[in-house]
Image 1 (cartoon, one colour):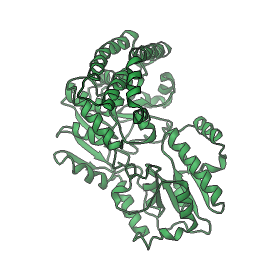
Image 2 (cartoon, helix red, strand yellow; image 1 turned 135 degrees about the vertical axis):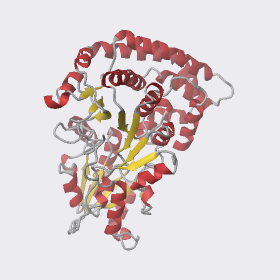
Image 3 (cartoon, one colour; image 1 turned 60 degrees about the vertical axis):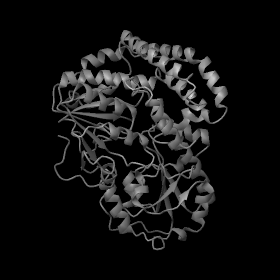
Image 4 (cartoon, one colour; image 1 turned 30 degrees about the vertical axis):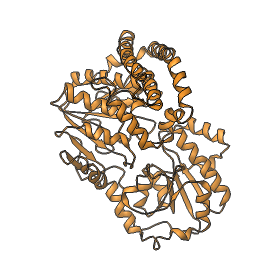
Length: 483
């Protein structure tokens, strides 16, 4: 089953339950077909009939287990309820919904909105994508900035949590009963049972808790404008529907900060949820044109990105070929690239291979992966992104924005995806017509004779690379802010 076929099945199943609160359910919404996001569905590809029987047998026990997990997390994190009440913010015109990850630095611009966001001028609601406790997050930023910041809590009061589970249990029963309908094939039946269980998962509950907390924040701060990151996640759909249903007078302004890939199902799904009065901000002209093809009735404005790199007049030229690798912000992607670069380094010892680790991966996670795979620390680059790109000839990537940023410095991108699909290639829309590498051996062979990707032979020159870079990540006009 292809990712597109899976997305179509999930879309059809969601359509069977109009008016049912399924938007927070992450299982029914695939953002894009990465390994980690497809992992929950892998079991349906074989022995579907047996797995359906087992899924039905363990349906109730799995839900009970999820409820106990929620209760445990609620009790363990009960202190967050106090820090949440203490940390309320004053009314301001704009509320920004961003993410707190390991990439955030207190002295730096926001990792997602960049220079478009002034933390002192707006209220910012950070979703906690780390394991850092809420009390510590409150202390992360200087005191003069904390009054504008709110951090999402991992739970709610115990009775509220149990109330959500109870309401969702009735939804789970509706999905479970539908799995016995003869109109559905065995795969759809299995998907329905799994979705029914995931209605009580931590990911689904986190989205529901976000909805509840966001209503509280909006009630307290009374913003006239709400802006959020726009990538296609279920929590974005939750926010969009919440604003439209309960606060229709608020201007909703999603910001597409990261490059979009061809099979980013979630972003098209959320794009359809927007109203004509909403406004989309994009990082460049390419994405603006892409969105416009689907929504001609909505205002789409290119405001640029902090990822913009000024075109360089000088490019790296040296006797040593230097290759930078750009993994994504998941352990699965990191380890795929570690294995790849270990192999390439062994095959071509005269070429310098360095791997950049996504800032969402912390040092502890990196060391565990290196130790697990028997990799050396020397494989990892400790330089800044600009230093790496300024001294590289090629960039091996899959879905990372680093490859786009490297275009401005004349770094040639090499797309690597073991599935051989272009579905995760953010440079697909640039029509560069570069080869797709599906194995480490193919890349090793390429470096045996790098002349096959000579820029002249492929009609690509560095000025063209720079032009494409600027169309993905435009320069932010002077004075432009999210106001």
